[in-house]
Length: 343
Image (cartoon, rainbow, N blue to C red; front, side, top):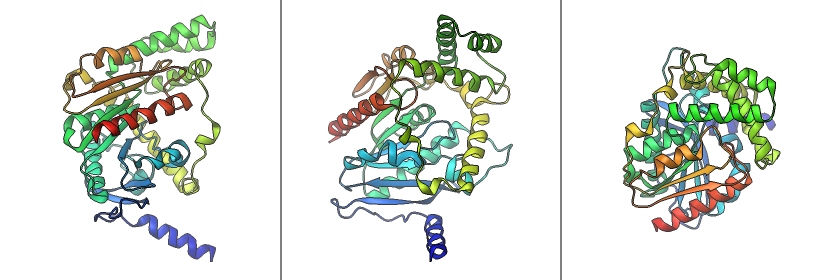
């Protein structure tokens, strides 16, 4: 019997989500997951909420290569009372990577991922019978999400940039400077020596960003509230050996595409100022006060130049780059406000 159930579950996971509307009764909930044909490959999409009438949020994950799907039930489960949440494993990440493992020399580009994200948004509007969605992007997802919002504002009620990254050159320089200052102030000779060995960005060694990020997490932990350890316990379907192997392989592949073998990856070409500062939809930035990787001051300078129907800049005390309870509480309130304004 257990083997039969396992085979049935595997079959269900392999079936694409149907294209027809799934929310004919606004008072019923929705809970589905599956592979959706998106721009030539099948990509993993989950949709979950307690009432179809609720606003829909398309959540664009970070990394790249770090899907939220394994942890969504812990991180965002309570939000499903008020919102229908859509998670998508991007090309080169998680379940999508496992379904379509790319060749080592196959490039991952911002243009392709933006097109994928917009196709996912269009699929969700059809599937749920919605005209528009709220668009939420965090870290790398903020880089991708804001491109989507700029390209197709008519698909979205608002864009919410979480720990929004602005441009590689400025963000990297401020990140390195603040991190080195913190290490010196703490008399952390090991971190100081590692950072000095890296030198000031731009970096051409693909390991450099990871080295600095590990040091960054150590120092952010001293000035931020810790996230509950239960948040990082994956749902059972994401604990299989195959999924773990696919997740790791996708993370490695996406990371190299992000930083490049010689500092020439997607990150090196990213600059929101070149994209422009005029938006045809409301824009919200939610920043961690202690975040060094996506510095609030850097984001504020860009934000102040934005022209949009409505905009709001929120700084969260005791929060850094990674999720914690103060950040989650602030985000939920921003989503509520954005949804209310869109009615």
